[in-house]
Image (tube, rainbow, N blue to C red):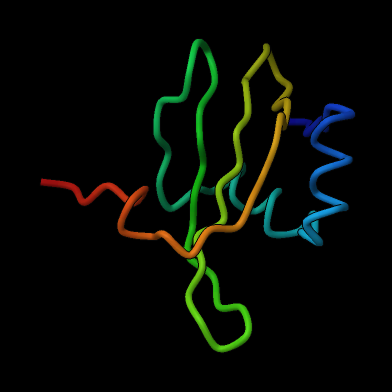
Length: 86
């Protein structure tokens, strides 16, 4: 699948200093995918940054054979967003 970044995604990824490699890794092979608003999905994975665990969340939409990245962000609130499987 081809990955496309919206202009908003390009801007926020640059401002938030997120590299494209973990974003693309997450949307191609996510440890966890949640349903977002509307037709969006949220891929998320835990990464080490500055000797701490952080959750990288990527909001995207699948359209035919394209993954459209809408936004991405780091959060330290892993417990808030990570869903344990029953």
